Image 1 (tube, helix red, strand yellow):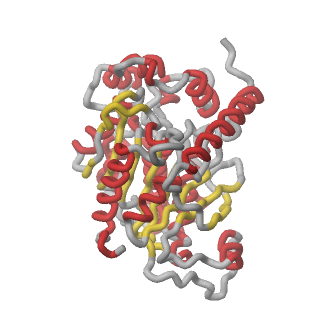
Image 2: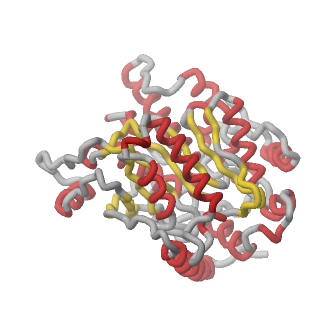
Image 3: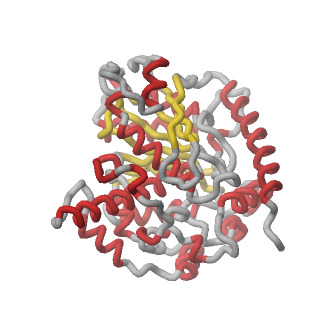
Length: 422
């Protein structure tokens, strides 16, 4: 059966984007209403060969002084600012958020309730939601490249925005959860490319916080047969596939002038991922039937088929193409995950979700290598349960409130913030 035409995919994507936008409006209308965005910035895409802009939506606490329009205009256009630095005190921690939607639908304002919970429960924290470009107009790896651009840009401009570049973390839901890991792997890839560039230029080994022994192990890892890895995952195996991260789809790092400073690509302090998509090696139908109670709790096939046809770039699709770590982070080698993923990870999965097995597999792998992994499987929950439209009975159910609170507790601990400081 031939793949659907690009114009038909765009029409379907437009329909579902509008449907999701309506659902999120209803979700936000339910009391208590979430915080509204404070301001937005458009930044240029640099890593992707298809140039464009990326929207950053800022949610800020009362302690943050909103920059002037003149300042925002100058900073996003890289114009000289002559000392016009945001004088926000204290410097704020930053949680960079990636929305869900199969890389095809959704917007950076979808997670307003999550942003509200973080702002309320983690003092002096700014949430920046990334509007990465969507498929089918922008296929893999554009979402990862745009999201990585956003992280590097925020780190570079942190002093001017009153942000602490050393206290930045990643959060995401579904496809956004995938981006938490794929962006970490991309940053590691860029950082290692920079290290090798420095080594070639200076004739000695540089050090920017990456474990070079682990990096060399990752570079020499032969990787497993993706079909074998898929079988292990379907059987509940405890070992995920490995693959050399250097073989992932890349763009020349010179686009970000990383030789000037590798500090923008160091690992961040924490990942908070909710029901992330982490592996595409198994067909969706097989994932659906592998988890009780079967397809009745899965996302509609009309929607998931659209996601797959829109974002996956390779035709015909092969196990090798699906095992790219930037597409399926579970396929990254242990050495790459050890070096790239922050030491603290909060991971929530859903009992009735076709993504359950891969999420729990990632939990086991990270914990096995010494990462501090918290979060849990949410009993009775389906994929995206925390953002179903709720007009009556509050905007979030009790399980979502509990999970958001637990995640905020871990975030405060990592950043050394006392809730009493609010």
